[in-house]
Image (cartoon, one colour):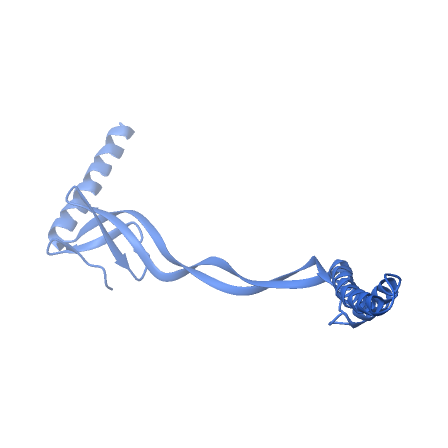
Length: 171
């Protein structure tokens, strides 16, 4: 008996609500999903790190004058040991020229091989990305057995009002 009374009350309440909705001409579309629209915001920042590099040590004698002079002296001395008379003079000059060139190149090779390791700071710009709300919502709803999507400035909740067969998105 209590079940029958409760059932009758329930049916009467639902019927009254349905009658009210028909009389007041209120219709709603069912909201299926609401997704907050976001955009990607990129913020630059500088990232630095130290890197060990091998480089040539600073050179004090850029034109290898010391090597040229020492080589010329040694070459001249060796050249003077060859021949006699004017031949000796030519050999001395030729030895000095060849020794000067050889001394220059020897000092150049020594300077190129004289290296050191130093820490160099290298920097680059990187971007941090984060999602930021736009204040708009993508709303998917069902109206007359068809699904639709609309963009709104607010979360509409579980239903959208319908007027003259169209969803009302403002208000």
